[in-house]
Length: 409
Ligand code: ATP
Ligand code: MG
Image (cartoon, rainbow, N blue to C red; front, side, top):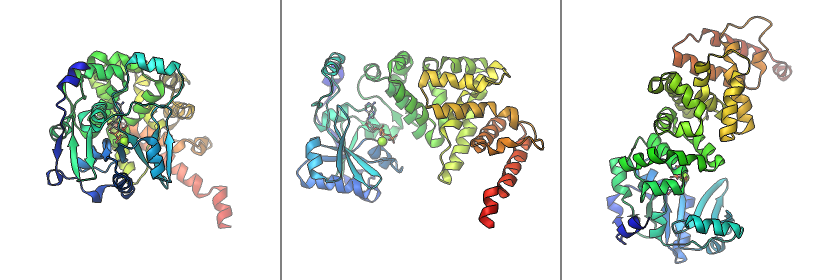
């Protein structure tokens, strides 16, 4: 840690307005309101994090976060629609309808492990690790996530070399990657998420550190890991993401049975990757019409190599496979039940429907089962004829369902 603190030059590179592509037109008007209000009250106010990165890449940011010199209580006083959240960091959430502009006071690098344990034993208290824009940039995870957009003069402030890495399309840890990954192992999964989503490569030393430190992911909090696992599916890039997870050893740490199944079905050539590719194609089509693929389908597709590796035909194969995710990642129970059903549905849907034995179409999860089976069959290059027949039965059943009759009558 000290070595990289010493290397700091104490001055950021500042890119003036003509030297970058961020236009206020592309910034959420409510985020602009927050920035301007803080600035007029005399505080420093920057757009920070993923929002700045995405704007510089010409992508639409998912959310806009603000960093400021104002303390949480001062932010609260400045906005009627502001709520302080979080036990330790007291983030300010400024609400505009359903939208939240997360506003955080500049922070310092987190405390040493000793200090964290000591503070934890004293119970919840206000964290006073407030810092400067410089310390706030250095505590962030990757250089491309450490850029600031200054509302005062519309410049981009770069303490960490993020602009060059954006140009080079590189995910690089800020500081010593070994230390940063030990501090917070979830950062390894975040590196993989950003790399697959943005199609950036992971810088050599950062990647080597993930390959060295992957095992410490076992010490991360399960809910955070579970959340990151499902985030790897978003942006229709799950095949790349999970292949990297496997190559780095993270899959073996988190889901050893899945790693075994991937190895048993061909490793780098396993159908596992093809299943995820077809899921990604399906996900891309669905997001065009504004629909998210369910986490149940995602989890079932991910775990399908277990079925192929075991060649088991018992009734509880799906439940067994999903039981692994339930135990290792504590996935929600609802996802567990639906995914189990999906993984067992090929037994029914791989054969043409027989008259009088089609009640499955009334199952709440029938449409998910249809999608799951299509993904698997397509990946395996098999006929989807039986599925089409099931889809017809479904359409016909609902065309003359009792509710339709009463609606018409
Ligand atoms: P997304 O588009 O997925 O929201 P993001 O970069 O905004 O990507 P967030 O998880 O929303 O990611 O976090 C916002 C910012 O907070 C990041 O850009 C990064 O600067 C910082 N950050 C988040 N998680 C960590 C972490 N584990 N360690 C260090 N910095 C982090
Ligand atoms: Mg974000």
